[in-house]
Length: 423
Ligand code: ADP
Image 1 (cartoon, rainbow, N blue to C red):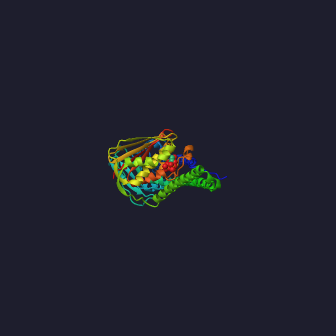
Image 2: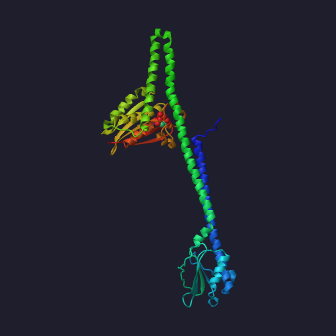
C-alpha cells in the first residue's frame, strides 16, 4: 500500500525542521563567537609571551615576569604597551621582535615604538610587515603620554588576522548555512507542490462526482422510460421525465461553471462596464437561487442601507459574485439564516453576506480563495462544489479593483464583506 502523507502532516514536519534548522544556526553562531573570543585570547597570550621574550632578549624588563600581565596596558584592542628601561634598548630590537613574532606565528603587520618620557615622544619606531598582509609601510601608532618609558606594539590588522585564523570554521559555517537554506527552500517548494497536487486531486474527485452523478441518474431514468408499461402510467412517466430535466439542468449549470472558470484562466477577464443597480442585482441573485433557498428552507433577510446603489461595473460578473456568496451561505449552513446588508462606503458600495453556517477556521480563511481549495470537514464533503466559486469571485473583484474579506468563527457562521469600487 502506498504511504501517503497529507500536507498537514508535512506542515508539521516542516515546522519541526525549521525549528531544528534555527537551533543549529543559533548554535553555530554562538560557537563561532566563542571561537573568535578564544582566538583573541590566544593572540593576547602570544603578545604577552613576545613581550616577555623581548625582555629576556634585551634584558630590558626590570619587572618580575610573573606580573607581566599586569604590566601590559591595553589602551585599545590593537595596542599593547609595556614598561622598559631605555638604556638597554637598541636598534637590534627590530631583529629580536621579528624573531619573536615568527616564533609565535603572529604574521600580521606590527608597528612598534619606544617611548621616551624625557622627550615625550617615541625615540625609536619601526615596522615589521606580516607575511600575509599587504607589504606596505604602516603609520598610525598612537603616542600616549606616560610617566615611564615603554615599548608599544601596535597591530592595526589584529581583527582581520584573528578572523583569517578562523577561515576554516567560517567557511564550514557558511557552507552549513547555505546547505540549510537550500534544504529549507526545497522543503518549502515541496510543500507547495504537495498542496497543489492535493487540491487538484480533490478537484478531480469533485468533477467526477458532480458530473458523473447526474449522468448516472439520467441513464437510470432513461432505462425506466424505455419500459413499455410506463406509457400506460402518465404520472410515473412525467416523474421520470422531470428527473431527467432536473438532472440535465443541473449538469448544464455545473458545465457552465467550469467553462466560466476556464475562460478566466485563459487570460484577464474582459469587462463590459455599465451603470448597474446593485440592489436590483441582489434581488435578481436571490431570485435565481429561489429553488435552492426553498429546498434548504433558508431564511433570508435584507438590510439595504445604501442610499446610492448605482455603480459602474460589469453587470453579469457582479451578479456572479453576489450569487456565489449567497449560494455558499445557503450551502454551508444546516438551517440557514442569512442577512444581506448594504451601505454606502466613502468611495465604494459595500455589501455583506452573513450566515450562521459551519464557519471557517482562521488558518483556512485565505486559502478558500485559492483555486480548487475546499475546506476538509465532514460537512464540506456532503456539500457539492468544485472549490472554484470564491476563486472566481476574487478574480472578478480584482478586475473591478474591489475587495473582499471574510470574518468567520468555526461553528458560528461567516461574514463575507465586499467593497465594490463605484467606477
Ligand atoms: P465550493 O463551494 O464549490 O467548494 P468555493 O470556492 O465557493 O467552492 O468555496 C471554497 C470553500 O470555502 C468551500 O469548499 C467551503 O469549504 C468554504 N466556504 C465558502 N463559503 C463558506 C461559507 N459561507 N461558510 C463556510 N464555509 C465556506
